[in-house]
Image (cartoon, rainbow, N blue to C red; front, side, top):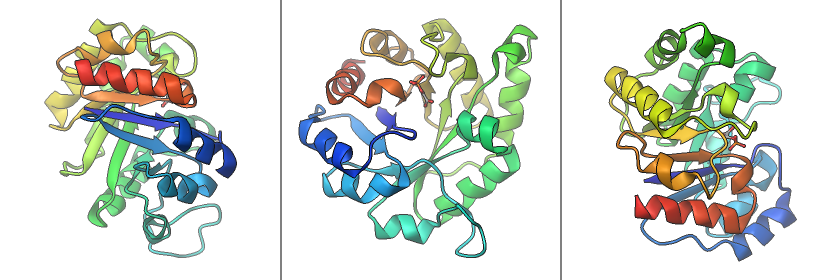
Length: 226
Ligand code: PGA
């Protein structure tokens, strides 16, 4: 069971330290936080397991605005998210680029959460499985790889996939690639238990509700029970 908190562009260093001081997750669940780049060191110093929100595939080079694997490792970062839908939607990231980021990070010993998920219009058009197949097929199996199923219509909207929708999509993803699959999209303390109880749901990638130490700890406890 892996519960990961994606802080997106929230929490500078002082807020990160305050979170670290207030957060007490239960033992028995793998818990990870994914702060912005400038807060990674502060999070690691708080004793949290820390992943970055993105990582580049090149060792170094002329890639303005990007961050390398070695730069992350130097801060004690253990993994990275790649291919988040906000990266795809707002910053033009592609399946191919996501796969390159994942492959380089995994080869260098970072763990990776690779995000996939359909848009609302794609679900309504009956294209969910085709989209997931395209996104998942770009990735190669690796022991450090976890996939996060994040239906884009459920991210930050308060609309959560039903446990049945999540179970169905996760089982489909696992039929393509035998990896743990996290659910993401408006996971909250009051819906986490039923989502995490689904047999193909191996954890959660939590956005908004991971910003508050008490609500994130409550979601982690829900993971412990399922
Ligand atoms: P949310 O975000 O929990 O705020 O919907 C999830 C995510 O984007 O990873």
